[in-house]
Image (cartoon, rainbow, N blue to C red; front, top):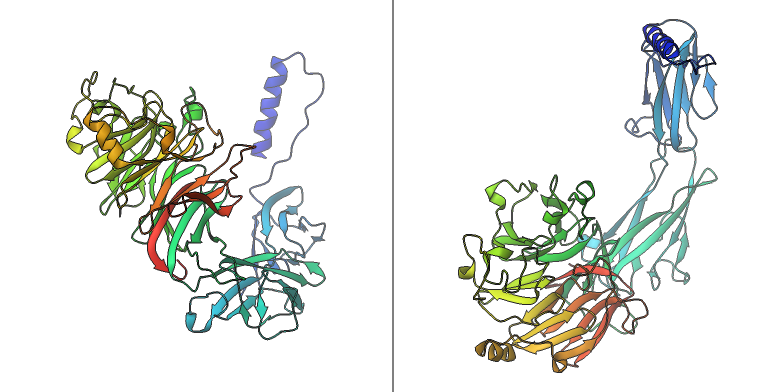
Length: 550
């Protein structure tokens, strides 16, 4: 064969060049182009499914003729020209066809049989606790239809089996558990255990989204190394029921520092894997992105991806209005795109992605900012921008759009406003315009509440508003993910303007008296409350529209 002649020539040349070779080389027999085959599923209705139990038709299409030897990869063989074969177990198989001394191989993936579950309500009504009945339908695509499956349903705590009132342990054996009523809000997880032909199939889990009877707002948060979750802000849940979070089934991402909600769309700003400084070009490649997700998690689109640029250009923090989505990178400035734009790739050489504002376009530059002053959360309130910084000039800085210079500033001499919390590590803040209070979290200290009147009074004397203890309303320490000046800390806060509540996700420092979870500052009681305990999360946002579900 041509291939073997070339290999033999190479071996001869190598042997002549090296006196160290004493043994004859081992010749490898390579697959032949003259031997070939195809395969397909013959079971009617399963032509596209390669499942355990399927009948696979193998067809010899070789140019060579002669006796065939088939090895199916599961220990079984055949000498037929065009055999059929059934795999009883799922797995990756290597199928080999030999004709004389020639052969070829092809991989074949056999998937496991797995049931699917569909939950339904009468007239597609929203499922709410203690009221709306849910029925479950199970489908099992099984090519070997002679085998009868056995089902065991493990239902959430507190499930009422309307058609089987004698069952109280939340377990039902049989194909159909009948009508169900759930007592707890949130994603109610149903586990289906299936045995087929004496073999246990993979367990299947399904979430039934169960709403609250009281129309309320929805809080979204991004779980660290987990999914996007939703939580109903219903503080009047009936006695005996629990208010649990919903799992949208959408991955949070590597570091989703900010979430934004606008027009029934949840925007996830994920700054990617590498969020802090490393002096390594290859290891500092960006992979951050902005994703748009439907409020119930049913659809997802890419808004912007950072491909081919450094991680410094990834989207870290954001703010949104009716027309534009603003996003800040690690330490240079803020860019913007239209709220309805999709499938964009960040191209830093394209004027479309020019900065809205940069560090060296404001009079804070050099007084106290350095060029690489580390970015944090930002927002626009009453025509004025508030921008947090955590390194090379720290605190909350303000500017009007008229303060942005069209050209680089060598060194600022007249900052537009005094600093709020100068030299403090402020990663996140929010402003309650109804009650005229600025809330901010300062690293290693806790939550501060500052009357806007005090800030205005300090502005009048051109004095920075300091983090006096009189403004500290709750003490806690967050974890230290990252490095100095770049700690992720509490990366976002959100305000419910209807009652003045402030929400944020705390990833508590180990051993801290304040545990990790989703927190609420309740201005009515002046206390910090935990509404979802034990969760480590990053970004958080609010859907202000009230509903029973999403």
